[in-house]
Every structure is written in C-alpha cells, then in structure tokens.
Length: 286
Image 1 (tube, one colour):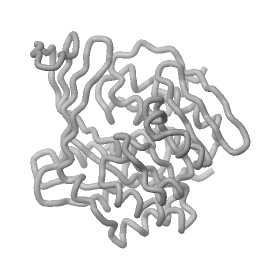
Image 2 (cartoon, rainbow, N blue to C red):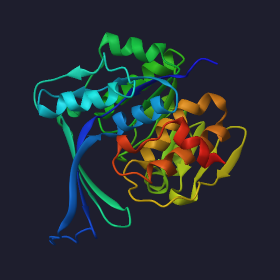
Image 3 (tube, rainbow, N blue to C red):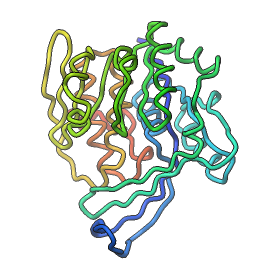
C-alpha cells in the first residue's frame, strides 16, 4: 500500500527549554538544571511524527531570516520532510520558551514570529493541499489561514485533521470543514460538545490513560502503553502526527498506534525530536 500523503499546515519554532526540579510559582525564580535549543512548533512537530510513522509529508509553514531558520529547516529535511514550499520571511522565526520539571510536566510561552505572517495561502500551497490524502493543521498560525486550507482541502477531497491548540473559538465554517478532531480533555471541554458533536470523527487524548475515539459507526477507549515519562512536551504532537499517518489503516488501529507514538515521545526530551520511528513504536504495541 502506498504511503499516506500528509500536508501539514502549521507552525515551526525554536524551542528554548529549561529543565528544573519544579516549575516556578507566579513571581518566583527557581534555578534550572540544564538548557537546550531544539526545533519545535506544533506543525513541525506533527510533520516529524507523521514522516517517522511512514507518511510522505510536506510542511507548509514559515521561518524568518534569523540564525534559527536554517537549523529549523535542517531538522525537518534530515528526517525526510519536504520543505520546498516552506516560506522564508523577513524578521524572526517563531520561538517557544519552555520549562520542564522533574516529573515531566511543563509550561510553554510561544512567540509567533514568522508563523504570524501566514495570513493567506499561495497557489503552490493550495496545490500541495489538494494533492494530499490528509491535511493536518493546528492553531499556532492565524485561524483564517487554517480555515482557507481546510475549506480548500474539503473541496478537493483531502481529509481535514484539526488539532485545535492553542484552543480558541472555532469559526463555524472551519468546524464544518473538519473530518477528524484531535483534542485533549481540556480542549474538548473548552470547545464544547455543541461543536465536537458536529464533527464526524473525534479523538480525545487522556494522557497516560490513552485516548477515546468517537466516530459515525463506532466508539472505543484505547489504553496507552505504560512508560517512564521524562518530558511530555512533544507527546501530544507525536500522537497527532502518527494518527494522521496511520488513519488509512482504520480508526481504532490508528488510535492505538498514536497512543504508542505519544507514549514513546514522553520517554525522550524535546518536542519534535522526541518522536519515534516505526522501529521505536512497534515494540510498545506488543
């Protein structure tokens, strides 16, 4: 069977990550244990997860003209993500300031940079979306661009997968264009059942407990493999990218694969870099 063609429309950031024994309370300063730079951004993270799960993956996003841009693109191309349609803009690339505590919990502040400049779609980007099997998107770029991509995908028979993070009110036209919604419990509650009930397929992630699937014909609770988590920063993105890559195998099988992918990512530090390849994920399914 041919690999699923996934077009990821979304953000790419440089993650500036501090590891500390515990997260600071408001107004408090704590000492960190270590610091590193690594590629992040929900769009790029999910693109890496998709390609490492075997999908043919194209990233539609933007970097700036700063020192981070080249390094960000190399992390994608080194894993096989197609970046020929990724924009190069004037100004800074996006960044995320992340703090991770000893239990693997995190806080994140994102500054959009080049991601915020994506307020339309080029003809080339529209062609990539129309040619894909799946378009996977999030909300770290302007929502009007996500809406344009989703409606174009729907008009061309491309399945639309939305991970609505950071959570915000969804335009009715975007809700109507989404085939598969991927949310955590907090996002599901914020969006509300009056919205989620309008979308054909909904996958709700439950952290270490796994995920819940609800579709037109069936529903299922899928357990997650038990792992020793060290950093949950990239687990949700690993789940979403892996789910898109495996969706053609059937909903429940894809959710099971995504749970294993998310669990594996939680055992490694970093965001996009924590996603595993098939050889890493398959043993957890056993």
